[in-house]
Image (cartoon, rainbow, N blue to C red):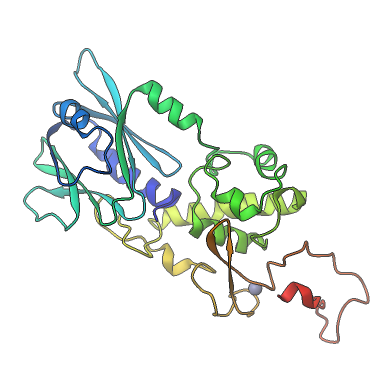
Length: 299
Ligand SMILES: [Zn+2]
């Protein structure tokens, strides 16, 4: 499922279309579009003014006329398998393409979605603001103080908090698991039991993971592609996601899998202990000079 890094990559790929005018609109199936007749009425002759991303949501700003701009936004959520790709109109469309937006330069912006869990709708500026107000903070924009306030005061499990779009916007299963592994935190720990140091570790881990994923054009574990139809490469950098049964790349223990907040979570039972790690004390070291790990933590 496209998350922050994938949607950001798509948004960057769409920005060169700013200034272009839509000439025609064509649909296949429309069950994932709110009021398709509104798209049909408003999009032709409209000019793309801006492309924004709010979490996993793409917002494409349009102006109706050059002089008396009537502004509106096309919101696109890629759902599970949505793809928004700029293609030459002469090229055959991929199967499951359901929206064609013709551009005046002969290219098309095509929306393809095998499962049709994506969503598309037109909203006003006020509608966009109302929608964004429901979302939490962008993990790349918020500072540690706000992060601590948003997560450290909550009893919910940290994995659930990371996935909750009202707490942070844009993270999904992949980057939540990768960030928790990097921060060495068990997904079932509660937000309020995390120490100040652990919260800083998590805040840093999310930023590092997501920024690196954006640099690599996102993660293509399923059918995700960018606005030019290219796959991302961050799947080669995954440390824990979908690696259950394989050796942890940090400590060699077998990566485990549990369900938290209804989602499969991948974690290392040794580097991400269920309980807070106790600072090693003198005399607690074994003959290899390594700290003993209490057996309950290995479960
Ligand atoms: Zn490990």
